[in-house]
Image (cartoon, rainbow, N blue to C red; front, side):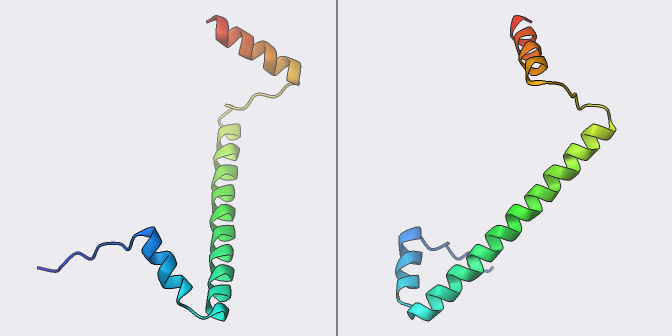
Length: 78
């Protein structure tokens, strides 16, 4: 049976990173930032696809801010 390795705690991770040379830490920050940007981009693309599909199904309404407020008031009354 294989032994399950515990994930390091956050503080332990910070201490490990602080032991790295500053150049390595700077490179790590760049890598993490790029990955975060990519994940946000992927989430945005997924949200846009979902919105386009909802529009294609006729689930999207258009109107003015006043129309929106009127719809919200009607929803609250129901």
